[in-house]
Length: 101
Image 1 (cartoon, rainbow, N blue to C red):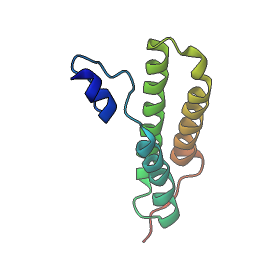
Image 2 (cartoon, rainbow, N blue to C red):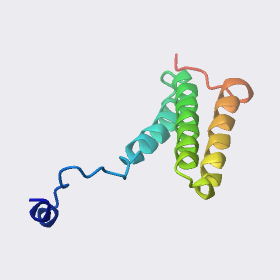
Image 3 (cartoon, rainbow, N blue to C red):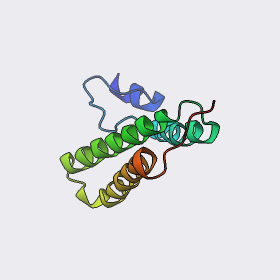
Image 4 (cartoon, one colour):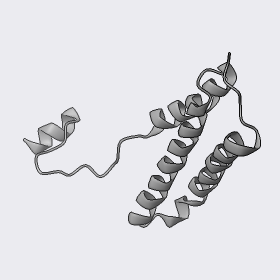
């Protein structure tokens, strides 16, 4: 049965999946969450929450890579954490966006 399962593309019984699900949809939604409230000026405080969410996602990615022994993959994630926190700081104190009247 395992030979047939592998031919069909199904996992064999007792085989553990090692790949993780793709977080790509989260990245796209995070970018939309950062841009859309600022551009439309509808609920611009959501930009702050989206920036914090993106930073939290990247911190989790760093922890994930380090736990798998892939520390060489973390510098880009660290840059994205910094950029997300920069957007949070900028939209919170330096250049806040007023909501639409």
